[in-house]
Structure formats: structure tokens, C-alpha cells
Length: 137
Image 1 (cartoon, helix red, strand yellow):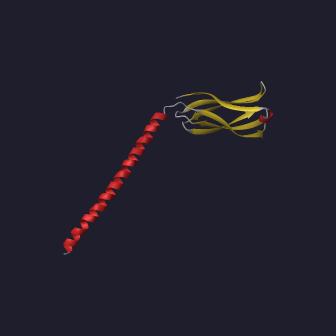
Image 2 (cartoon, one colour):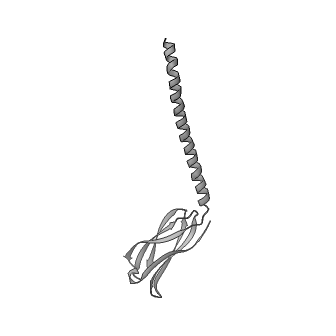
Image 3 (cartoon, one colour):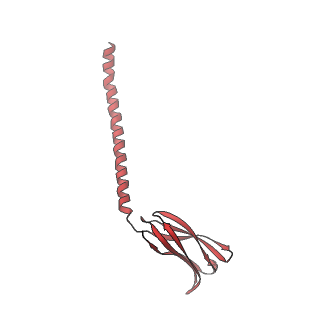
């Protein structure tokens, strides 16, 4: 009689195991598909050129002028090297003060900080900062 009870329980247990195998197989398949989609997206977008944007973060008075803290953002898919960043204070058609800096290395999808020191207070005009050029390795 014990053998008969054991045989009756086994089919229900096997059915439960089949469901677990199905669920785990589906999760594994979904994980593989998600990984393939991510790798495909990376392969298609990594080849894009650097996209650089310079943003003023803060301005403060320092000996010899005004320190303009700039965040350089590369939202593109490639690294930029030797990035030339310029800043200037402009009033009308006249440039009151200007400064430049070079950032050696800006990886894809990253940020770098730099400081430009201007002789004129940016409040005396319009402050403009921009990435002017770069090399692609």
C-alpha cells in the first residue's frame, strides 16, 4: 500500500517540477534576449562620433580674475582627445575677456571638469563656453 501511495504522489510532483523547469527556462530565455538586445544597441550606437557640450557650473572671484568652472559632457559613442574648450565674455560685438583650455581625454558617455580663468567679470557681459575641436583616436 505504501508503494501505491508513493506512485500516486510522484505524478503530481513531476508536474510541479515541469512547471518549475518551464518557468526557469522562460526566465533564462528572456535574459538571453535582453542581453542580445543590449549588445545590438551598443554595437549600433558605439560607432557614433563624440558629442561634446560645455556647461558653466559656477563662477567665482580668484586672484588674477574669475574662475569659471565648466563641465564638459561627451554624450556620444566615441572618445574625444585633446578637446579645445574656450570661454569668453562678450558685450555687444566686443570680446572683453577670453580663455582656453585643453582636456586630454574625454571617454564616450562621460563628464570632465575644467576651470577657465577670465580677466573680466562674466557679469559685465555674456559668458559663452564651447568645445571648439578635438581629435578622434
